[in-house]
Length: 394
Image (cartoon, rainbow, N blue to C red; front, side):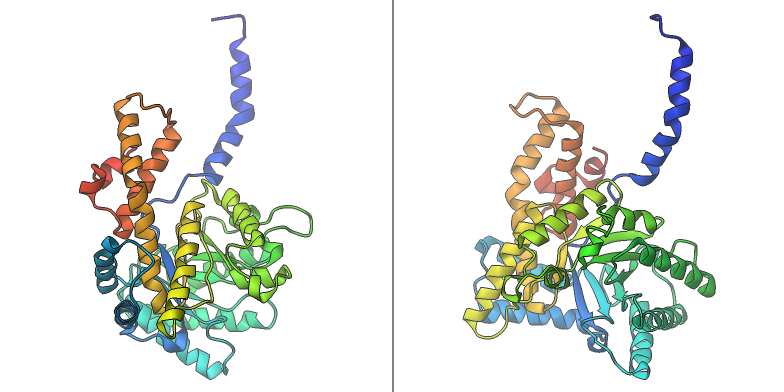
């Protein structure tokens, strides 16, 4: 050993030990398991047991009546199979903007009906509801709806595992609102005898204050910290955010520079925290005659691809006819990148020289890319050359 006293290392351990622990707590890494490629928002009064099959059938009808999709023809069979097998990956029963303000009796009944539907699972891998915001006069209604939903869900049978049913909290601006949501979750868990931490929620970023606070500090990281481990995602709200920033209606888009700025801040704040990201929606729906449907598909397809290329692996869909381009766009992205990802990962694992010097973090990203392709149905294990266990272990 050199001249340095061992006491120095002990001093460094004492100084940095708490820092190490806090970093591990705050940045545990990417969330494990499948992330849905989209969230479908459906107003609560339009939800029913046959909803998923109905959306799949409507999407298939749009493919039949208005061909072709703006993607290579070889994707057609995969998209059709997906629409028949699993047309909706993540369903959100909506009590906010899509539902509007109703009489209390009507929303009470809808909340209970939604809880009973959720108890049956509705045939989707991921499920949840969006309540109204916790701001001002809407607070009472938001709390009551969630309470009645859980009451009906609790009576309906077996509960889904923690994290599989998610509450969307809209119009969040400051950490205090997230802290209040944590308190509400704790009280509801106690009231219904649910395990601690069972209720999780995602935060909608749709106000400028949710990106940059009045104190000049970035807000998303503070929102994640305020959630005490219950926040599963940050969802960008395209139109509320753009309007609040003064963007004219014709220019409001998830591809606008104000959206790119907001989503970049969200992305940095959520990195390595286990909190996932979701892009927003487009209000140009592919409906009407063939020309209108094709125009809607072209815009949606471009936004899906753009989001994926920027690391946003999830988005919103609001109409069944958006499903073909959601899945075709997602499949094309992963299939286009498959060969290069497989070759680079194999070279890294085999320690061969390829002209690209990949770091361990990049190898994990390559494996993660292939896992996402497997999860959504874009790829098969045979096409990647690895099974899920091997990819997960990289």
